[in-house]
Amino acid sequence: MRIEFLKLYTPNVRAQFRFYSEVLRLPVEKLSEEKFRVKAGFSILEFEEDKNATPYHIAFHIPANQEGKALQWLKERVKILPDDGKEIIDFPAWQARSVYFYDEDSNILEFISRRHMYESASEEFSSANIKGISEIGLATSNVEEQFNFLNSEFGLTKVTGDYEHFCATGDDEGLFIIINKEQKDWIPVGDKAYPSPFEIKISLQNAIFGASFKHERLSLL
Picture 1 (cartoon, rainbow, N blue to C red):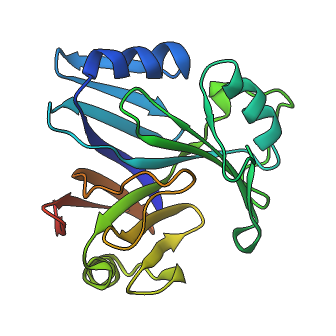
Picture 2 (spheres, one colour):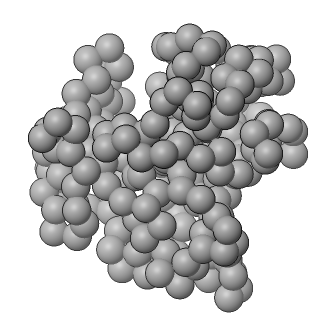
């Protein structure tokens, strides 16, 4: 599953524009005073202004074994969010390592390096090494309902977790991180998980599918 397009909402559209263009140094296109798009590898990330918007969790793929280089690059630009003092967090079951940080909305951003994906052509790290969006967090009070939608409409399956507390759904290329907002917070620092609305387009077997998440429910676009 590849995340081709993801639309989020922001209460600070100008600050977010500056962050993605000047701090992360990604290509950014201004669509209007209230909306802009970011080119992040194979993915398009769009932000639209909403003064009542709440934070998200988003992950980006980076090349295999580049988490150390990415950490140093990020430390020149942002504050790193550690987990129990560790700036690089190991996920052995996923063959992955991650680094976490905030953008201007306190969205929890993650650079994830999977040891079996996206070999790097360069030893140095830059924004050009961001390969695409890897994950979108989906906070809900009914994990099983959201999983069932993704399974029945798109054929996505559970990678890990359960249907009550946490369910990573999709595959290594793209994941919905579904959590029960009544029982879990976002790692690594325990931020509150909000059922923040989003729109998404994914590609599966050369076809594009769209969905929206609003009022804690997924529906087709």
